[in-house]
Image (cartoon, rainbow, N blue to C red; front, side, top):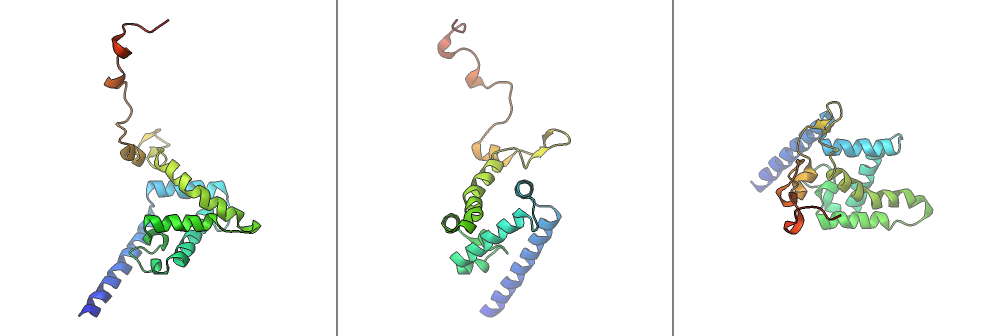
Length: 166
Protein backbone atom coordinates (compact mmCIF):
# COMPACT_ATOMS: atom_id res chain seq x y z
CA UNK A 1 0.00 0.00 0.00
CA UNK A 2 2.83 2.43 0.86
CA UNK A 3 4.54 1.51 -2.40
CA UNK A 4 1.36 2.33 -4.25
CA UNK A 5 1.19 5.78 -2.68
CA UNK A 6 4.85 6.37 -3.47
CA UNK A 7 4.33 5.46 -7.12
CA UNK A 8 1.26 7.67 -7.33
CA UNK A 9 3.23 10.55 -5.81
CA UNK A 10 6.07 9.98 -8.27
CA UNK A 11 3.66 9.98 -11.21
CA UNK A 12 2.01 13.13 -9.93
CA UNK A 13 5.41 14.79 -9.49
CA UNK A 14 6.38 13.83 -13.05
CA UNK A 15 3.11 15.26 -14.34
CA UNK A 16 3.71 18.48 -12.36
CA UNK A 17 7.25 18.73 -13.71
CA UNK A 18 6.05 18.20 -17.28
CA UNK A 19 3.33 20.83 -16.83
CA UNK A 20 5.95 23.24 -15.42
CA UNK A 21 8.19 22.59 -18.42
CA UNK A 22 5.33 23.25 -20.86
CA UNK A 23 4.41 26.49 -19.08
CA UNK A 24 8.07 27.55 -18.98
CA UNK A 25 8.52 26.88 -22.69
CA UNK A 26 5.26 28.57 -23.62
CA UNK A 27 5.42 31.63 -21.40
CA UNK A 28 8.04 32.00 -18.69
CA UNK A 29 7.19 34.22 -15.76
CA UNK A 30 7.92 37.88 -16.50
CA UNK A 31 10.82 38.22 -14.06
CA UNK A 32 12.36 34.96 -15.25
CA UNK A 33 11.93 36.10 -18.85
CA UNK A 34 13.72 39.37 -18.00
CA UNK A 35 16.58 37.43 -16.37
CA UNK A 36 16.95 35.11 -19.37
CA UNK A 37 16.90 38.05 -21.79
CA UNK A 38 19.46 39.98 -19.73
CA UNK A 39 21.87 37.05 -19.50
CA UNK A 40 21.55 36.19 -23.19
CA UNK A 41 22.08 39.80 -24.26
CA UNK A 42 25.06 40.20 -21.93
CA UNK A 43 27.00 37.45 -23.66
CA UNK A 44 25.50 36.19 -26.94
CA UNK A 45 26.67 32.60 -27.31
CA UNK A 46 25.66 29.10 -28.29
CA UNK A 47 24.37 27.65 -25.98
CA UNK A 48 22.86 30.82 -24.49
CA UNK A 49 24.34 32.12 -21.25
CA UNK A 50 21.03 31.54 -19.45
CA UNK A 51 21.13 27.82 -20.34
CA UNK A 52 24.79 27.54 -19.33
CA UNK A 53 24.11 29.32 -16.02
CA UNK A 54 21.19 27.05 -15.15
CA UNK A 55 23.24 23.96 -16.02
CA UNK A 56 26.12 25.13 -13.83
CA UNK A 57 23.79 25.89 -10.91
CA UNK A 58 22.03 22.53 -11.21
CA UNK A 59 25.24 20.51 -11.45
CA UNK A 60 26.90 22.24 -8.51
CA UNK A 61 23.65 21.86 -6.54
CA UNK A 62 23.52 18.14 -7.32
CA UNK A 63 27.16 17.71 -6.28
CA UNK A 64 26.66 19.74 -3.10
CA UNK A 65 23.39 18.04 -2.07
CA UNK A 66 22.94 14.75 -3.99
CA UNK A 67 19.29 14.38 -2.92
CA UNK A 68 18.44 17.66 -4.70
CA UNK A 69 17.83 15.81 -7.98
CA UNK A 70 14.83 14.06 -6.42
CA UNK A 71 12.66 16.89 -5.21
CA UNK A 72 9.47 18.69 -6.10
CA UNK A 73 11.05 20.50 -9.06
CA UNK A 74 12.92 19.19 -12.08
CA UNK A 75 15.75 21.61 -11.31
CA UNK A 76 18.16 20.44 -8.60
CA UNK A 77 18.94 24.05 -7.62
CA UNK A 78 15.23 24.86 -7.15
CA UNK A 79 14.88 21.97 -4.69
CA UNK A 80 17.48 23.40 -2.29
CA UNK A 81 16.85 25.41 0.85
CA UNK A 82 18.09 28.98 1.04
CA UNK A 83 21.11 27.91 3.10
CA UNK A 84 21.98 25.18 0.58
CA UNK A 85 21.67 27.66 -2.29
CA UNK A 86 24.10 29.94 -0.46
CA UNK A 87 26.49 26.99 -0.23
CA UNK A 88 26.22 26.50 -4.01
CA UNK A 89 27.19 30.14 -4.62
CA UNK A 90 29.99 29.84 -2.09
CA UNK A 91 31.27 26.81 -4.00
CA UNK A 92 31.07 28.68 -7.33
CA UNK A 93 32.98 31.65 -5.95
CA UNK A 94 35.63 29.33 -4.52
CA UNK A 95 36.55 27.66 -7.82
CA UNK A 96 40.29 27.99 -8.45
CA UNK A 97 42.37 28.32 -11.57
CA UNK A 98 42.40 30.90 -14.32
CA UNK A 99 39.86 28.97 -16.40
CA UNK A 100 37.26 29.30 -13.64
CA UNK A 101 37.24 33.12 -13.62
CA UNK A 102 34.05 33.44 -15.66
CA UNK A 103 32.26 30.90 -13.44
CA UNK A 104 33.35 32.79 -10.33
CA UNK A 105 32.13 36.02 -11.98
CA UNK A 106 28.76 34.43 -12.72
CA UNK A 107 28.42 33.01 -9.21
CA UNK A 108 29.37 36.32 -7.64
CA UNK A 109 27.06 38.49 -9.75
CA UNK A 110 23.99 36.37 -10.46
CA UNK A 111 22.33 36.99 -7.05
CA UNK A 112 22.86 40.74 -7.47
CA UNK A 113 21.36 40.68 -10.96
CA UNK A 114 18.29 38.78 -9.74
CA UNK A 115 17.83 41.23 -6.85
CA UNK A 116 18.20 44.19 -9.21
CA UNK A 117 15.59 42.78 -11.58
CA UNK A 118 13.22 41.93 -8.71
CA UNK A 119 13.32 45.49 -7.38
CA UNK A 120 12.99 47.09 -10.81
CA UNK A 121 9.98 47.18 -13.10
CA UNK A 122 11.67 44.79 -15.59
CA UNK A 123 9.10 42.00 -15.29
CA UNK A 124 6.10 44.34 -15.20
CA UNK A 125 6.83 47.10 -17.71
CA UNK A 126 5.10 47.06 -21.10
CA UNK A 127 7.57 48.66 -23.51
CA UNK A 128 5.04 49.18 -26.29
CA UNK A 129 2.47 50.98 -24.14
CA UNK A 130 5.12 52.47 -21.86
CA UNK A 131 3.24 51.59 -18.66
CA UNK A 132 3.14 48.90 -16.01
CA UNK A 133 1.14 45.75 -16.78
CA UNK A 134 1.01 44.71 -13.12
CA UNK A 135 2.36 45.71 -9.74
CA UNK A 136 6.10 44.90 -9.68
CA UNK A 137 7.22 42.25 -7.18
CA UNK A 138 9.79 44.66 -5.72
CA UNK A 139 7.01 47.10 -4.85
CA UNK A 140 5.21 44.33 -2.95
CA UNK A 141 8.38 43.29 -1.13
CA UNK A 142 9.22 46.88 -0.15
CA UNK A 143 5.56 47.74 0.60
CA UNK A 144 5.83 50.64 -1.83
CA UNK A 145 2.45 52.29 -2.32
CA UNK A 146 3.23 53.34 -5.88
CA UNK A 147 3.48 56.58 -7.79
CA UNK A 148 1.71 59.55 -6.19
CA UNK A 149 1.51 63.32 -6.52
CA UNK A 150 2.61 63.59 -2.93
CA UNK A 151 2.42 61.83 0.39
CA UNK A 152 0.83 63.35 3.45
CA UNK A 153 4.05 62.80 5.35
CA UNK A 154 5.86 65.17 2.98
CA UNK A 155 3.20 67.84 2.44
CA UNK A 156 3.77 71.24 4.02
CA UNK A 157 6.86 72.55 5.71
CA UNK A 158 8.92 70.77 8.30
CA UNK A 159 8.38 71.68 11.96
CA UNK A 160 5.45 73.99 11.19
CA UNK A 161 7.47 76.51 9.13
CA UNK A 162 5.54 78.80 6.79
CA UNK A 163 8.24 79.27 4.13
CA UNK A 164 11.49 77.79 2.91
CA UNK A 165 14.64 79.24 4.42
CA UNK A 166 16.48 81.69 2.09
